[in-house]
Image (cartoon, rainbow, N blue to C red; front, side, top):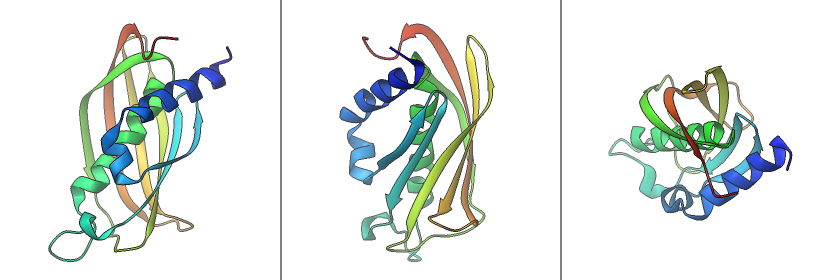
Length: 142
């Protein structure tokens, strides 16, 4: 099995049992080893009291992108630390795209940035940085 095939298999298997990502309505747009691009539509129940996207939803979209990207390398990896900044807002009906960037990867850790943008626009809605611990176990039973 090629690395690309493994990445697709791992992310597909993760998504099958990731009921929260399913509830968010996340669509997997692209996966390759160490990379993931996700898409999500902002729904009414995702808005805060000011009528804008709740920060926890942005964080969750980015966290799913992070998890899929690092686990696509085939080794079970879990988050150690994550943070997010919200330079812009999103509102009902807007489509968000989260895309990962692998900054550093070692045998035992990974550092990733995830940018969330409005589909087709350059404006960043969320900028997430995550650090993960990479275990010695396979992400899924291959």
